[in-house]
Length: 76
Image (cartoon, rainbow, N blue to C red; front, side, top):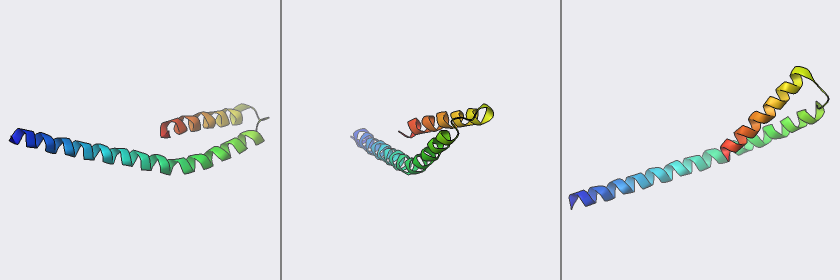
């Protein structure tokens, strides 16, 4: 009987920990979306203004765009 009680207690603790983890991930994701959206807007603006640029500037803008896409996917 004590084993069943302990098992139930452990199950409840695990469920609580998983719920807290899910809440943290949800809140972190929500908080990261705002700055990502702002950065995305500025990247798009810079890319449109520098579309005729070449060399290192274009390479940096392309890299910034790729990393922003990757960050967006991580947050989703």
